[in-house]
Length: 330
Image 1 (cartoon, one colour):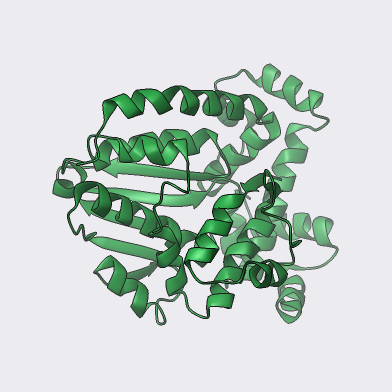
Image 2 (cartoon, helix red, strand yellow):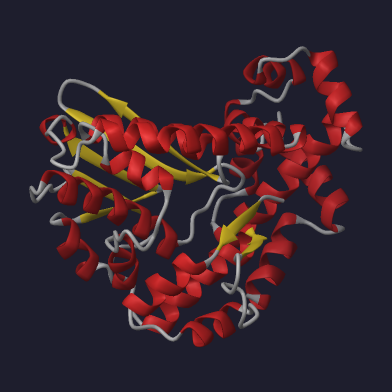
């Protein structure tokens, strides 16, 4: 399972938000010294719990957009400086996307046409993003655009996962109504993505680029083949592409090389495929109202009976019984 680094930047943000650090850590089930020293690496689940705890401690989802708008030199981050030194938002998004693709479990994708640019923030290793994290990332991008251009950029569209009933305060920040969807998306007007950044500075970019590239190379070298396969399967499964050849082609290796590298990590193609399917199945049945047939489709099973057999092998029970028990426990 992927880990996420948390350090002193969290202390700065929590202090600026007026939140008690120890109270947030206690809610998240984390030790009081988590952010001390050089910080810590925690699991993805623990990272989500940390964001959820901050929102609960604040008592309002608007804390997420406030967190995302805290852009400060105290939060020293080469990726942020690379973005803010860009000539425009289009370039900044490209730099951030390239960095996030190799560093950490999250990704940013941007697609453009003549009228707009759509940006999506997601997790590479699980289908959900906790609301506080998703909102803060969207707020960060809008704040970046506003601060770098000194123009009140208002996105065309803001999409968040789940209900939007209690997010009126967040809508005020973005300047538009929030739309319920299956993830966290922003749509910028084309004119805003090409609006010049007043913070553009190629000299500073040249200063931070080597650090960015080194971090990206180190992160790439540190990722296991099983992590790479899981990420590819996460994207391929809903389209029914569950073959080793498809994944190997996506990763730019041969099937024998893929098998050999998985074996060196003590696992196999089938084990990674089943592990990914099981984790996604548990998520879908615990967090959504999708039917077994729909879940089977998303997991790339050819027929519902295949999902039922696999799920019973994983859990010893049926999807319906497991879902009922999971919701009672939650």
